[in-house]
Amino acid sequence: MFKKFLVTLLVFSSQFLFAEENFLPFYKETTHFQAFCFEEDKETTDEILQVLEAFWNNWENDFSTINSNYFFSDEKISVFIYPNVETFHQFFLKNTFAPNWMIGWEGSDNQISMVSANNPGPEHTKESILNLCKVCLSHIFLQNYYYQYNHLCDYLDIFEDYSRRT
Image (cartoon, rainbow, N blue to C red):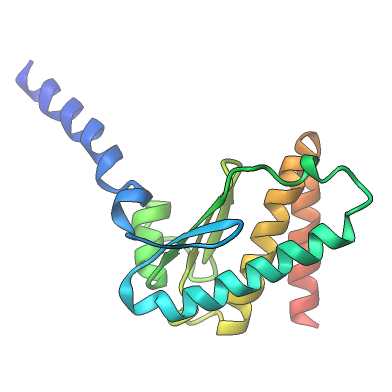
């Protein structure tokens, strides 16, 4: 009985131990985003936020003829910047055996989690990290607009991967 209680307590408490909001401190808010990162990543986080805001504005201008309420919600998108690949794998993916190319993720709950451009890992560069944040934001826009067509995000990944290799 006591053993079951300890296991239940451990499982329940581990869900809160690595919650992103508690793990990464709040850094800054922009017009459309709120960022969470450690002190050493503030400069690169500013750069990522600039890229995201510019991409948001381009997207908004390109689709101004469409009712933008379908794409954009009033809720700010949370951007979680992990200091390196290992930390991202351990605390976000909860899989220390994940491949090194796995450096970012966007959620249907308007969240982007990614590795810092300061430490992109062995398979990426600072430029690929900055491109990743645009791809993740595109996925969020597409998920908000074309919720029933989630395979569009897969096509976007394939195209981005192909264009990166050529």
